[in-house]
Image: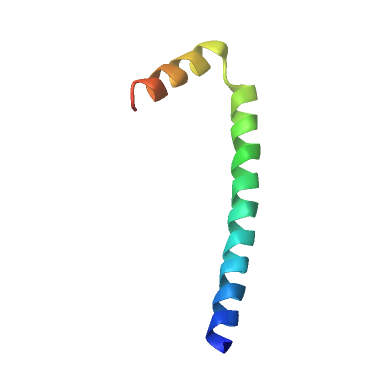
Length: 52
């Protein structure tokens, strides 16, 4: 039972870190989208659709 509670704690901590990291990446993504020109966005979307 001690092992189970330790694992649950570790998983919760990892989830918390991932949520924070995801939030940071979303903010960075929004900033980059705002700074990019329409041509850059179109070029990026074309690259994503073609698989890289």
